[in-house]
Length: 53
Image (cartoon, rainbow, N blue to C red; front, side, top):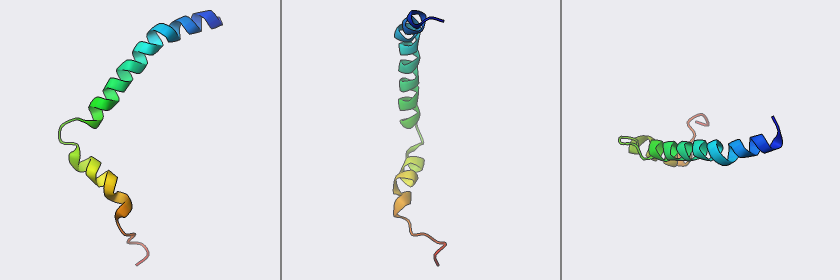
């Protein structure tokens, strides 16, 4: 493939693919029933380490 062919692909279908992926990631983050998992992930750094005793 030439540079021009790759650039044409990235300008058209690459942009569409990135847009679909972005919408999918945002939809995944805001899906119903995910608030418990996101709250647990957000507050996990504040939990004390149990291995130290």
